[in-house]
Image 1 (tube, rainbow, N blue to C red):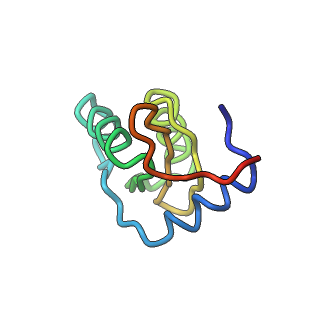
Image 2: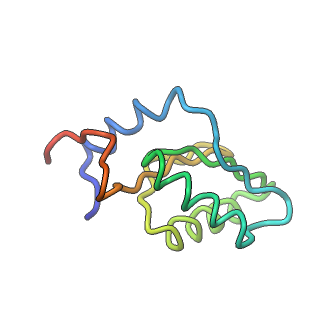
Length: 99
């Protein structure tokens, strides 16, 4: 289910104070990095990922691949940081505003 604008705004506010939990290095995406993203999303629902790619298009494609692989929603991407959200259906931790 895609996020509404008000939900995305709420999540951006929550993500502002978070530190990156996963860092994608110069080696790019590996299975271990994707597994770490999946585990972090399952545990926290909202995470920040730092992508250390010099080229803007390369960063955007890495973030898009992480989102597609993990089944998450991109909340915000600024510079090298991306905030991702995926609802934990068994134990939801973050209450989202309606609509």
